[in-house]
Amino acid sequence: MRQTEGETQDGRTRNAQANRERVYAAAIKVFASRGYDAATMDEIAAEAGVARRTAFNHFPAKSDIATEWAVRGGESVFALVRDVDSITSPADRVRAYFHELALMAERDWDETRQMTTGLLRGHGVPPHRSRLSVELRDWLHDCLRERPGDGPTPSADPALTVDVLYDVFQGAVMRRLSQEAAPHGAFTAEVDAAIALVLAGFASDAGHA
Image: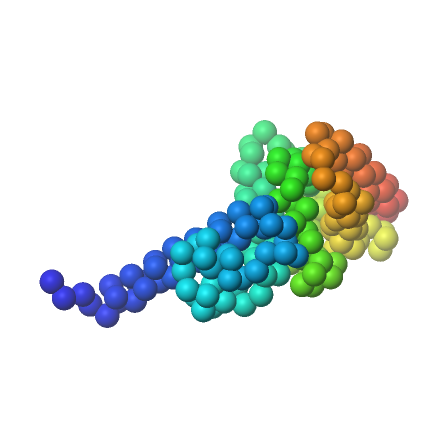
């Protein structure tokens, strides 16, 4: 039976997505075995079983793979925290987001180190004005709405606070980037304490209305 134009296009889209997943999974494996700096796109393409051109079509640079890793990780943790009904406080939801992000980083510490290296090589310290940043900012706005009084002072700035929260998390990663051994909970504990400190400052500013 002859395929329609739409069915043909759908098939191409599925094949392209499958190839992208193969390249991404292969990159994770090659980075882990060779290190980000030593790995090449040729090695990644060979591991994925695709042509070199196909690998470059999906990821024009190695750093694009690191960016994909960061986006996927952030979005998966965000979805996990957002859908937990037992977390009712917006501030607790923000804490939970960074806690789960830290746990994810620790679960495969070498992968975190290699991919963070890729982000730095390709982009330097990444900016924070992303879709996730906007949603975190909205959670902090919810924190303000829960407080009594006429409203926050200008210093209680949710957008700035989100930037500081990400700076705190990334700073914790950077300080341990040269550490090959997994932190075994120390990294997550450091992140938890630092995030709590920032949120306490935010709450203090918000309370002086």
